[in-house]
Amino acid sequence: MPPSFRPSHFLTPLLTSLAFSFAISADPAPAVAPAHAASPASAAADPIPAAAVPAAADAAADAKPESQPPASKPVAKPKKQKTASASSSPKGGRSPASVVITVGPNKIRKRQIDTLVNLMVKVKRAPAEMEPKERQYLERMVATNLIGQELLDLEAKRLNVIADEKAIDSLAGTFKKNFPNDEAFRRALKEAGDTEPGLREKMARQIKADKLLNTQVSPVARPTLKEMMDFFIANKAAFPINDSLRACQIVFLVDQNAGSLEASKRKQLEQIRSELARDSGQLEVLLTHFVMKARDVSDGPEKKDGGDLQRFLPGDFNPEFKKQVTALKVGQMSPVFRTPLGWHLILLTEKNDAKFESYQLQVARALMAQKSAQAGQGLKKYLKTLADRYKVSYLESDYKDTSLAGVYEP
Image (cartoon, rainbow, N blue to C red; front, side, top):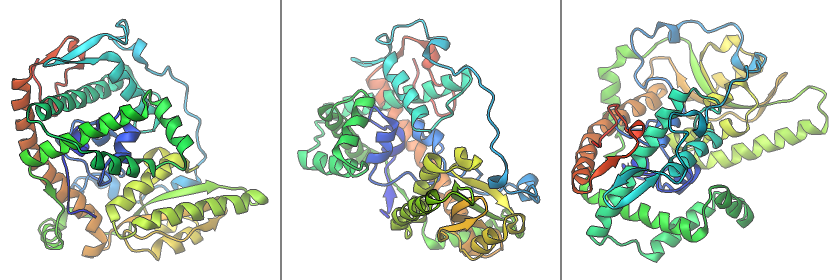
């Protein structure tokens, strides 16, 4: 794992598709995104949505969970609600080509924001059905991202920052590896409304933005083992000590009499495990990829949460499940195993037994959040400087981010 990650990976995903912005990052998004980040990636991709340092008042999380495991509950069909769309928002009357924000001489159009928000829904970084206020929240974050990338692009041009062809080729090659073949790659480009030359141009902007930020904002170093141990000792009282575990799972529900489907599902899950195992030495990367895969393919009701089973007591699960999960250390994956429900693959993420090694993921998440928040102050200051140089104007005030993450004034 590289020793640091760059703020632009969270602040300025420069591709038209959010899926693309995840795929081209040199360092996959860590489990905790910086508190300052105003990107859709940081808002929607936290694999395990629990606080990194458990609050003392989090009694509910430490309490004994329900007697039935989440995976054994029937999947209730959600009530159909009207999906919010661009036309149902306050800005629905505007043409997609309407300019809604200007950054110096550059323009941001409504369709750019709508495209990214819709792609967030498509690649499951946001709920498919959301209230208008929720959609507006995402629109504001996307707008803030687009402003950031325009500011960095203008400044890179002013300073004559260059992205050489070799760097673009390398990034493009890494990106293409995320697709099984050229046909899938081109189909994804078409769905995103992009072309290969357009993609290369966006990659060039990403490279230039990274170069610029690396000269202006100090990277956030990943916590050392000593930092983690010191943090754990200083905050030990905040961590739960009980018999509970926490894990993410990918499950394929298969009837006992499934016949040929039985072998097919097992083989598919074995292949997924083999692919994920490549990241077994990088816990945060493994967790990120496991969660993304669970969201995509798992059959369990916890799929929407990236397979997160929340905290549970092993005895509440099927005996085979209990046997497999209790044999794991934090950060380990189980073998593919069978229960009456189907085929399971488990990644253990918490073991609340008072031993430091069992809390390393929680500690790392907490420290990364702290460090990122501190580094974010410098990043926000730099972006505000650029916003003064290249005036940011909101022609549609509903896109202005008024939260703590907002850094630009109209």
